Image (cartoon, helix red, strand yellow):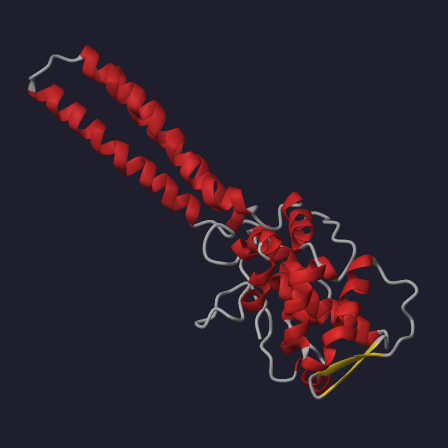
Length: 283
């Protein structure tokens, strides 16, 4: 029985060791020691990392304004009709939305881009492949999977304890009772530790690596400034006001009215439910 109790303890400790090690590894990430991460084309993917699909659109619009392809005045966006020959597909798509609805402001451009033009899932997948964000299914199921992986060996050892012990004795009741209590304690602890990691809680899917990469990112151009910090981080605040008008900055984080946030669940939803863009990309 003693050997089985030791085996039970080892199984429980090994089960919670992974989430603890992951939390420690996240805490040790430093911007000055980041691995090289390819985020081309910039600043579009940097915008997705910085504030979600809405920020991706904002950074793309800022790039178009900086290249004089789009002009902004009082929150209204106007395409100039020049310099469009070397645009990539996403920039050209956003430009098309600006031509169609730019006069209604950046919020309408975000909405229409999200509903009709951009596949945000591919950009998100690009970031996930590089460990900068957590994939949607992984966010939902990995902590639970780890918890179940802890429960399985605990259940097996408990069964062995019940089979090997002398039924009705005090030692039997105590050891089996504690083992059964561990079925709840250790899986729940493993799940909680897993959900405590960056990228696994709330509406912000950025990992610790993604957050560190964002803090270390160069903001040497207006588009990159918007990608990392939103329009609030643009050096020329007069220009920022002329582009965004009275609309809010896009962000991953949820706001009380839910209209200005675009969380990870909304990406998958918008791919199959175009009308989701009406509320997901903010106003």
